[in-house]
Length: 134
Image (cartoon, rainbow, N blue to C red):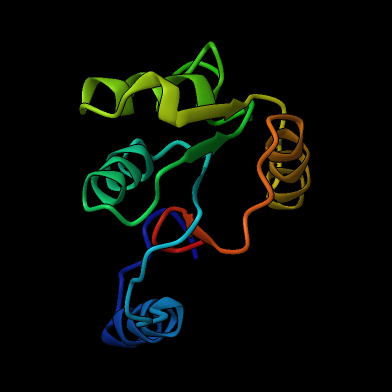
């Protein structure tokens, strides 16, 4: 598409199809840990905090360093800014672990698993929170 291209009804239909595909639709249930994956979207931290307050997870891990799209918005790293946002939303600091190195989803999971083990946690269930189109 060029910069002057018009968004057609087919484009909207294609976008809707992709959006619907990403909607898992699982009923939420309590789990051992909620893992918020870093990105440019602070809504992930907001939603993770809401899930904590709803009693769905007693522990939160925010995972994420920086990427070219987040370096200026979150200069201390995505996970650090997410933690600060969740604390502002009323999540106690002791309920949050921060994994500040991950630069992709695979690293989010691998480094979070190591961080949890380092802190003596061996969760049997986890809820992953990410931006809606991920």
